[in-house]
Length: 154
Image 1: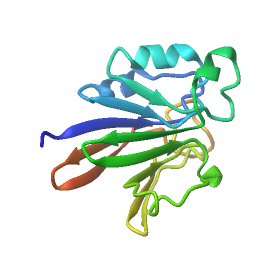
Image 2 (image 1 turned 180 degrees about the horizontal axis):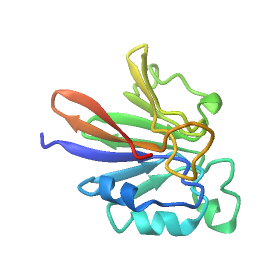
Image 3 (image 1 turned 120 degrees about the vertical axis):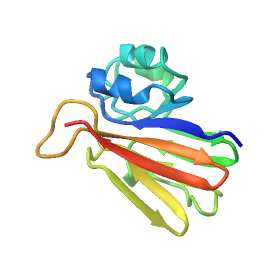
Image 4 (image 1 turned 135 degrees about the vertical axis):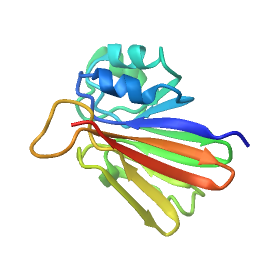
C-alpha cells in the first residue's frame, strides 16, 4: 500500500496562514475539525486537496449549513470519526471500529490512545489565543499503521 498523507487542521476562525498551506502540500486529503469561520477557507484548501470539514460552534452563517456536525471517513481500511467538540462525542469509537477520533475546539494540541483508539486534536491554526501554539498535524497512513507528525507554526 502506498502511504497516504492527510492534513489535519482545526479552528481557523477565518484565518488561513501561508505556512499552513505550505505544510499541507503533498496531502491527499485535508480534514478540518470545525470553527472554519469563512467558506472561502474551504475553497482555498480545496486547491491543495479534497477537504472534509465539520461544523464548529462559530460556523453559523449560510455557507456553514452544508457542513455536518460529524463525518465518518475511510482511508485505506482506517476509519476516522471527525467532530468539532470531543465533549459532544455520542458514540463508542471502539465499538464502532474507529481507529481515530479527530476533534478541535480546545485549541490545544493533543494525542492520546484510549482503548486502542487514537484521539487527536491538531490544535488551532487560526488567530493566536492565550499562550497556546498555532499547530496542525499530518497523519500518515501506511501498511504499518498510523503515524502523526505535529507542526508548531508559532
